[in-house]
Amino acid sequence: MSVETARGRRKLAWLCGLAMTIGLIAIVLQQRRTGPTDSRDLHEARQALQRSRYADALRSAGDVLKRDVNHPEANLIGGRALAGMGRFRESLEYYARIPNKESRLAVRGHVEAGEIALRELHDITSAESFFVRAWQLEPDNTATNTGLAYLTGLGDGGWSATEYRIRKIRSGA
Image: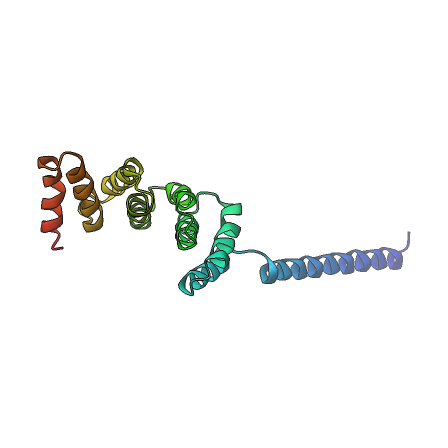
């Protein structure tokens, strides 16, 4: 094999490697432009929810949930969208999947779910369960204590609701 043939083969191999690298870069860039991203889908879901386009919000949140079924904000948006559509029982399933590790978001979701269970479904057991989950994360939350004081007052109407009422007063509400 001559020196020129070897150089020609090296050039050819180098050009093939360069072409493959350029092709891979093009594929990555195309995927970034058209590929699904949680932030884009959540942004679309938030906007749709704000405009009361509940089906669109649910669809965008659902795209995120296909990738991560326990995504906190996507479950919160999905629950709100379903509640906005009057599908209250289904909305509670979304709220229930919000993990407790996202404390602020979880508290907000559990309180909203408790209020839906109480006011829309008249399901005191579910409402209490959601309010207790919120209370465990943030015992001084005004909405949580209001809900628990109300529910406890319904049950025995008396002293057991006092703790939640005192917490509510101390929080300044």
